Image (cartoon, rainbow, N blue to C red):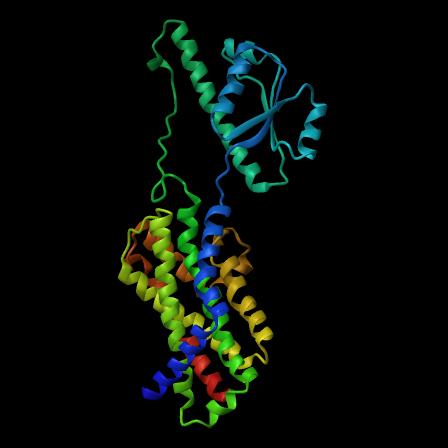
Length: 375
């Protein structure tokens, strides 16, 4: 233990003496967390919108006013003809054009459906999909109000109007905040970036600094050298998870409904996985540049793309869905989001814990084997 502690102390001193490394470890995850939480959002509001009203009646103006007041659409301009629609999209002034056809008011007065066309710029697929949903919902709401008004004007009770009522409730994130979805996932992404990258560099730097041979000829055994190298990063990884989780809860009001103990256990298993991946890279890489590239390829990209952080895994092609099972980030992502937002416990998360345990044992064992072989 004394030899492991000596190696760990040496590693700590290296970390503390390098201000750039401290910046990467502590400040960069927080900066990235704020950037991702504020900039990476699927919430779409104030969509730039143009209107084209061929009817020019009280009813058509009321419909367009309802659109404007929804806060989802921001009417920038009123077009005079169809020929101006293409220019509105090409100039990127508008993403949506709402066209109210002639006879809209007469149709509503006669109890028929009004003629409304929604033209959406599909070059931004996410905004286009949301705009399509918003306009459809608003048209349904406006149509229902018109029907109720007509029934009341004829002196009938609105209770006689047949309707289909859909009572929709959103659980766990009722406000639909993107930050609530992203912040628990950011724990996985940021910890992966820092832990894999730094542990991948730990042995390669010794080689480049010329101190590797001194360690080899010292009385320290190889396994003790490996444990001493990763021990400081294990503590730093745990500290980073605590910092990111605390900032998310206190700074972004992200709910934490689950067990802190279960999150700590999962974090320990995942940090072991990432450190093991870094050590495997460091055992094979010949330079720091190579180690950095391999760390990005093996650690960051799969965690970012195949863990469900941004894209639901179910929407990926089948081949990528199968590949995603090979990366531990997929399982830790489910655990963090379930513990934070749903308050789920071991009774529902045991498959993910079992998978993380298998990954941690396998990766660390493989890293130790390669470390012995290399040294």
